[in-house]
Image 1 (spheres, rainbow, N blue to C red):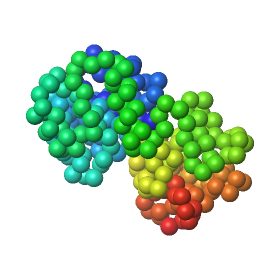
Image 2 (cartoon, helix red, strand yellow):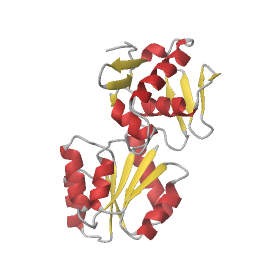
Image 3 (tube, rainbow, N blue to C red):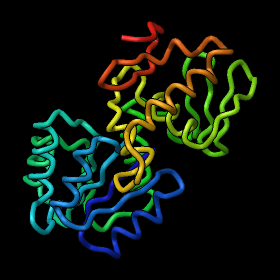
Length: 228
């Protein structure tokens, strides 16, 4: 899973990263404009968002995200303990609130609760779709207990699809999530890996669950209709 930390205090940001990096692939932004740009890519499973930031505050960032129909779960951070700040945060779309300073255990529990509410399996470090199972710690995949051979990016693609089953993921989202914004390759690599993943799953009759939306992207579909 992917976590974005938007916090201008580099010491606190690094502390949060160290606390969460065993559970998340963590990226950091240190001002509001950078944080909004990254969050708008819509490739994160959760965002930790400070309120007081240079260039753009946390409320403004969250308002922009929700206006653009980006509903990534957000935990807002603030040094204030006022009820007005909490009300404003929830009004613009925050999912939870954490007052600084906070304990490591409290942060992890809040993240766990949010990720569980959005459907991902957190502490077990595993994902399932019908009889397809992924272990995201040792990066193994199996169907009916039989191990499936997947290379690194194929595993990442399948994990992303399983984390967002029945949701269309655009080729751009997949590319940014798996290959990164600064990759030298192009988004056509997504088509290549999706095709190869289908071929790998075909022998288990699971290839048709990956639905293609031509010119748009892919979705792991419960009804297994294949191409759209």
